[in-house]
Length: 561
Image (cartoon, one colour):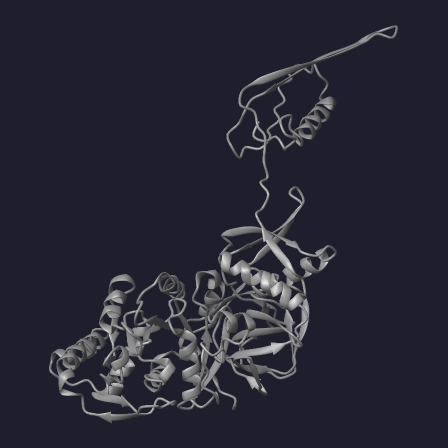
C-alpha cells in the first residue's frame, strides 16, 4: 500500500443498529476495491472486521475494527463499529475518529433504537452522513418503507440518489439518478459488476419522480444554483455533486443509497460517492487542543507542518502481540520508528512497526500524513483517549465522552488463589474498554464490575478466561444495608469523681434527630458559655462517628442523622 497525502484520505465510520449489515458492507467494499483479497462472511466466521473469537462465535460485532478500500486514487479508512447498545462505546469512538459516516439500515427492519443512538452521536459531531439501505435481497425488504421511516424518525432532509430494481428475492439492480441509467447486476458477481442499461419502462414513473426531487433538493442548498434551476437552466452532474457535497457538510442533505452487501450489489456506486461526497480531513473544522500544563488552547488543522497531535481512540490486547493502539492524526505527520510523547502520563513512546489496519492484518507503512489513521503495537503506557505529541510541544486533545455503565454485578473466581489474576485482568480490560468499570468493595467483600448491559458483562467474563486464564462467575451484588433513626431521641451521660480536695462533675446530653436521605451524619455543637470545655468536643464527635459505624439493629452503618 502506498502512502496517501491528506487530500487523498477519507475517514468513514460505518454505523447502525446491530445486524443491519455494517460488517458485510465493509467487507464487500474492501473486496470490491481490491484492497482485501477475500470476500468474507459473518455467517461463515470469515468477515474481515469480525475476527475475534467472541465475534466469530456470536455472529455480530463487539469491537471497533479498521479496514481500507483504495478507490479512485483515494484511501478510504472504513471504521466498522458495533451496533448493539452494550457496545456503543466503540461506536462513539469510531464517530470521533471519522470525518463522515455511512448510516446502515436493514431493508427489512428499518430505523431501530441503535440507529437513533448512532444518529445522535453523529449529530453531536456534525458529521456529514449518507444512508445505505442494505439487505435489499432479503425477504420482506421494502425500500420505500425505510425511506419514509428515515424522514419521520431521523431527518426530513434525506434524499435518494438511487432506487432499487426489484426487492427481496427479485432485487437485481439499482437506478442511478445521476447517470439516469439502470445498473443490472451480473448473476453470480462477486465484485459488484453490472450492465448499464436504459431505465426500464416500468420504473420510468418512479425514476422521474425521484430525479426531480433530487435536483430540487440539491438546487435548494445554493441560492445561485436555485436561481438558475428556476430559470430553466440544466444543472450538470459535476455541479450537482459539488452542491450535494456542500449540502452534506452543512447538514442540509443526506443522500440515500441501497444494495445487498453479501452479493456486492451497490458497492461500486457507494465507493464512488464516498470519494466524491465525503470530506477529506482538511475540509473539516479545526480541532481544539490544549497545551499540557497550560490553559492555552490551539486550533489544529490536518497539516503535515503543524504540531503533532494524534488521539488514541481504541486499544486492544491481542495474544502474542500485546497492546495494539489505533490512533487518528489530527495534526502533523508520523514516521515509522518515530519518538513521541504522552504528556499527561509523562511517557516516552516509540512508533515501531507503524501500520495500517486491515481487519486483523497489519500493513506496515513508512509514514502517515495528517488526517490519516494508523495502528502501532507495544506502546508501554498509552491507552484509549490519550494524546500522542512531541516532548517539546505537549498537547492534549478533547477526550471522547464515553457513556457511563448502567448495570452492576459481582464477579468471583471459581478457583481460590486467582484473585490477583482477576484484578490484573479487569484492569487490562478497562484500559481496552473505558465503558467497563470495576472496583473491590471492602464493605461487601465483593469485586463489582459495571458495564452497558448484560451482554457486555458476559463478554468481559469470557475474555477473562480466554485472555488471562481466570475462570470467573457472576453473582448478585450484596446489598449495602444502612440503619437510621425514625424519630428523635436523646441520651444523658454524667461523670462524678471525688478523691479528696476539689471533686469532678460533668453532665452531657446528646440529642439525635433523623435527617433527609443522603444528608449523612451532621454533628452540631450547641454548648454555650463554655460549660463543657471546647477541647473535649472533638472527642465527643469522634465517639458519635465511631458508634455510627455499627448500628444497634443489625450492625450496619447508621446514616442520615
